[in-house]
Image (cartoon, rainbow over all chains, first blue to last red; front, side):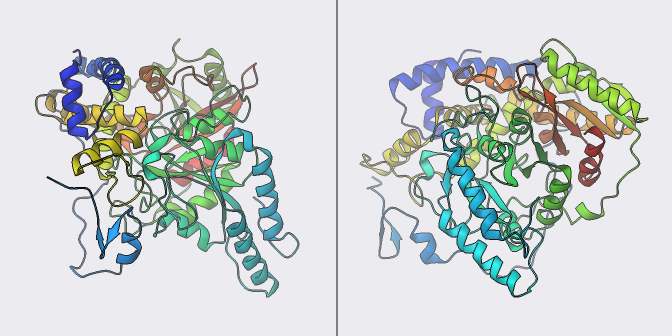
Length: 95
Length: 456
């Protein structure tokens, strides 16, 4: 299938990218080729095959419901942000 | 490897490594060199040796760290603009284990941003050059680590392998590169790419060094719930008799000199009394398509955390929160990151989920079953790592499919979770290294490394 301009804009929206016009064009071309390539799975017969999402050899891993010691403190984590005011991360207006 | 003792100081080892790193600076191997930190740590180890204190199994051994491992030394950038300025407050479990044994990180190595790529050309800092031909790629994504070991700057380097990112650059630069069984080494503190296939591993010059590093770094980690129990040291050295070769990989899409190298190694094995068994594994033909669905889906999910708010780069010209996210992510990611995130969101979106994501998950089952069947017939499998030796810089960087095809023989191991060791297997007439990979069943890691000595 061809990836059209509106598909790219929709995917950019899902991916949170503000793409430039030039990028929309290149990505349309690249993504069309990639989708064409991965579509070769169409010819594979998977009738009755169960899907595999992980190869962990295990189901749930349980631990006691207690607070464990953390590797990084609140201060260390806050210091990673570009703008912090009163122990809170500052961002531009939301609305 | 050379380990510090009373005669050879850690400081000497580290100074030599740093000097070589500076000497080869035009290869663009390192994103950060920790000269002062490494020397300070070397002097501490020397002081302990002088006092007769017990030092670790890697005392004073200089190593290079792929720049997608978190540690408090230097910025962790994953060679991506979006992590600019990020110094981690935590250290990866694998790094902590190596350093507890006295290993000294001299620098962080270049990679394709977020490990998306097979050439190290997708790095925000520019490409790393091949150790044997500066007009060619280092391979990727762990290109910097492979070249650091190949040029003998360090004794070993860390890598991550999601679809071939250790084995392919190892083969392009003539060193050993190991991707263990999924879950063998903790992923805690490693920048996530695709959580169901990401593996931590190493580059070394010998199988003995690989065995030592695996013995140190493997094992259960409460901070990574997907780690397997401690099995590495106990995994028995099996009596290996039969080695499989995959008939589907013996065709014209694979470079003739690589196919010759495989034949030569098979002859060597036969002369040592091993039986070579031809295997047909038709599902592997679909591994690459399944991989480039499953992995982008996980990438889209894992990379949604980079938003410019909590850490790393933040776009300066945003006027509200939505444009902060959009502009930060647009300016902060490389083209290949964007392609993978968007493909991931495509295969997961309603209307396409069944045809792509679910179908790839079913193909994954077939691939796992095919490996299980193969290992009923043979002990290990020997295959090429990639269809060609190191290619020219710029040759494939603008052609995503050509670049993805580099991974056609490496990705199926990650989907199945089985271990693979890239071994040096001579050179082409033009002098480029050729690599082959030994593949084993899950939890055969130690036996696989041991067996590779038969191929030297």
